[in-house]
Amino acid sequence: MSEIVEKTGLEPLNTHDDAEVAGVYVSDMASDVITGATAGSMLVTLQTHKNFIAAANLVDAGMVVFAHGKKPDDDVIQLADRVGLALFTTADDTWKFALKLADLGLR
Amino acid sequence: MSSCAHRWSLIDIRSGYLVVEGCHHCGARGTYFSTEIAPPVEEYQEGPHHWQYMVSSQAVSFNMRCDICGETVDLGDVEGLMLCTCENPDCEIGRMAHEMGRNTSIYVALCSDSTHETNPDCVSDQGIAALNEYFNQRLREGPKKILVLPCKMCGDVDCCPGIVIADSGLIEL
Image: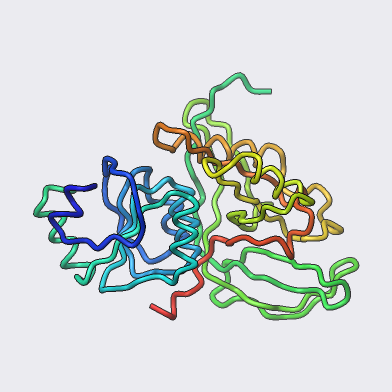
């Protein structure tokens, strides 16, 4: 995670422990996350609603990246802190950020 | 009871709407999953309740099948999952959440009738067991646990704080 954060310029929104990133899943729908995302994966999304955190926690996502400079409200960050979920934001849109991940070898 | 160490997969994944209704007689909350093109908004009588449409969100429903023995579990009685943020000692689920600490996330499986007057069995034991096995089998190694409990254990599921997993907030994107 720390390598990805450094090389893509992600801005952390809460404190987190470093961990392996097991893959990437791009979605803006909580319902899609619970049926499609896998444990340890990075979720890339525009969705800053609390229910996205509830879904990400259920599938044990490794981290959530909010694209296009999106930042969730403080209560959403507090919920992520409560369940131990690392949150980041990037100014890149989803496509540009995905290209950066691909350049790093993430598939 | 099966001796199989089940390895569950999701099957019959369907997109639709999680429709929430309220009974203005008793204040009960009703929930159901609809696959219609638009969420139904009709009022109707069901037993002691007169249901009125309140809100709907996009959502998915699914069942489960064991990859090892082929057993299937019908989750048609699960209308939604709610991450519990309650720590009320007077609520059984809130008390459990407080005792278990932050490494255990409790999700309440919501059935169709918060009062359980029209659905006294709530979510089936088999469904609860399968949901627990499925979500815990997928976790990374570590202290984290997922605990899925039926909403009948909640002291007052209409008032308990929690976050229902549904696709609300999409128009704010």
